[in-house]
Length: 283
Image (cartoon, rainbow, N blue to C red; front, top):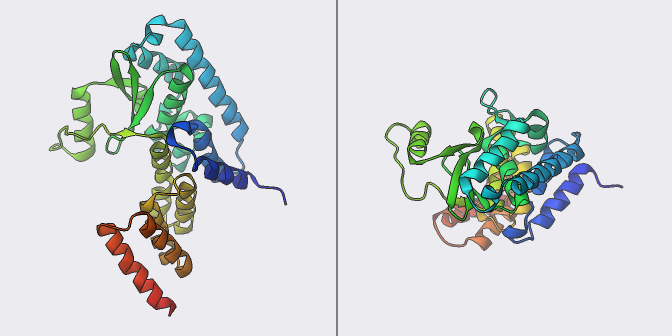
């Protein structure tokens, strides 16, 4: 029997899960996640659009000596002009919770998406141009940092690629956490490629949970584990979801794996209690 599109995508995720973070092709893996979620969509058209984006970034870098020499603000402006200007991508504020906003195929089709999905396009373009960039795990709002010889430019990709300075970050954290929130150490934590992809999929998982689709949320978690097979917290989540679905054997397998990866700490102690209770149910 030939492999389905979802089978192929899951095999690609498992292969990417064996790679060191630096070797992960961020946009290509996001595309595999999207194929699983939208198996009937034209993923090849999205692959072609990603190639077009990369080619546009290369051309923009070659045409601007100041940016290519290392000016991060100039790099931000060029990428914003390409992604949000010429190609028309924007944050979807009107239907923010739509699952399509976290599916790269649908994002490319609609030119609308969540911050993390748009951020993956930014990171893909920057890498194609030969520029250093990384995700920033800002609370509740994914950002991108474009680097250069003169420092870095922080970017709000959901707001059309606008640059962010300290006062902007302060307003942003207050909007997310409330008027008493202030800037503090650790707010601009670097997010590696695997972490960015897990954050992308976490949006789908949480929306499925809120919609009462527990089997769908578990499927999403299992796909995340293909990319991050050593992620103890994800194994715990998968175990608890299996437990709620009364799949006791599968739940124990997941919980035991989480304990192999993370045998100490409060989370491990709680996991052992749940696992012991489940074993009693099997006896």
